[in-house]
Length: 123
Image (cartoon, rainbow, N blue to C red):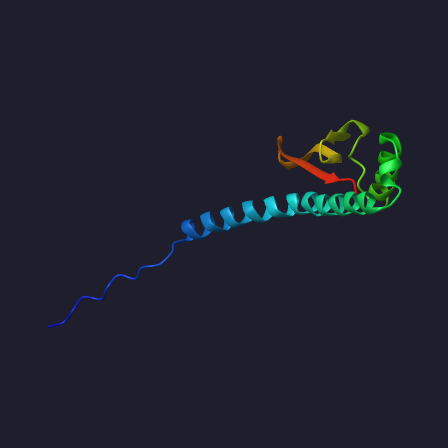
């Protein structure tokens, strides 16, 4: 008794193209968002560094912003504004708060918007 050859099974050209498009979409998403998150890490480190200084609690809000802005300028972060930064007084002490949005173009007329908020207590 001879068997008929089994039909070969596998991914077709269309399924390969579909998976290539899906992987390309997520790769593009990562390429567009990586610099934004990398900047956030630099912003967070700058805020922690400024908060750890001994003379920081004696400074006003504007003096703290000027010090932070110099750190941001050195790191090439130019999209933060004065209105994004404020001091919050709590029973535990004073906190520096940076609350901002970053908008980056994605595909065509679709933009990616990422919201960040970092709070650092003054020591």
